[in-house]
Image (cartoon, rainbow, N blue to C red; front, top):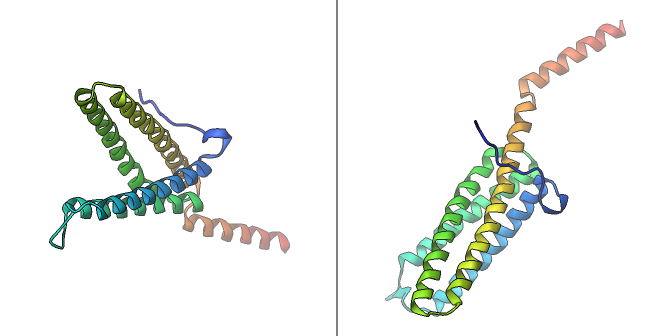
Length: 179
């Protein structure tokens, strides 16, 4: 038995296409903000640049941001044009990895904080991290549902050859009825 986990609309009754546009725009904004914060924090941190050599952490963050921004742009293009569901796959895959990483990171840092400083800060960190992961899962579900909606729409649309055949047949019928 195959279960389908999908939603029919974005919050507030918006369509999945609109929801995907919102998710793409928010993802792009947060990715750019994250990159700016990272660049500002590394410019003040001398351990990232030693003797003019940039660390792997710095290069890795730049490369991952480029991949994520590219995937987000593909999501926005697909949502705007309402075609090509395959453009959504890179974002869906990267988002799954990001959600899993966020959950593991939140639990790890939260537990480390609980052990190092026995107060509520570890619980707060875990709660905020897991809350952000839940929102990420909902956003992923919106884009995933839109992906399947687009797949169903593209299956129903006739191919280019079928469209031209239909037009030719309709023109022939119209010419026959004129005589």
